[in-house]
Amino acid sequence: MARRGSGAGFKLLHWLALALVLVLADQITKIGVAGTYALGEGTPVTGFFNIVRVHNSGAAFSFLADAGGWQRWMFAGLSAAASVLIVYLLHRHAGQRLFCFALACVLGGAVGNLIDRTVYGYVIDFLDFYVAEWHFPAFNLADSAITLGAGCLILDELLRVRRAG
Image (cartoon, rainbow, N blue to C red; front, top):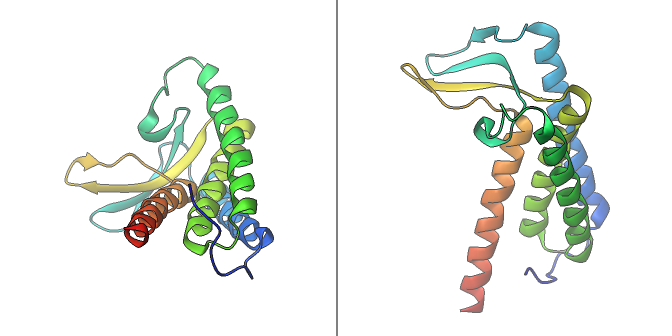
């Protein structure tokens, strides 16, 4: 578990503000995509990247997307519970910059996708990277924030273990 560290000047509100900025950026981009493209429609940007509107009623990589609808509320509940836990951890460890940066990214991403699930019943994805005919599953800014946060959590733990050793 992470411990209190230096940088006590960073308070809970700083981390919540970062999460809010991520939620707003995520929602603004999704609104822009939903207002510009019909489902399945897109625009080629480069030889390896498209913007394309996709709906994902499942979790990462469309896990449980065809489960019949119950997964919407299960994933929404998990996101809400994780968000409460993250806010608690941010409060408890507000001075640990890398740890809290990671948590704020995960929180912003989780809330961004939670909004989609509760409002639409699916998450709007639009970033489509590919090589030849192979396409990585489409994702959005919330997913990117969660991935960045997860990577920073791993880095924070590796640095903590290194300091302890």
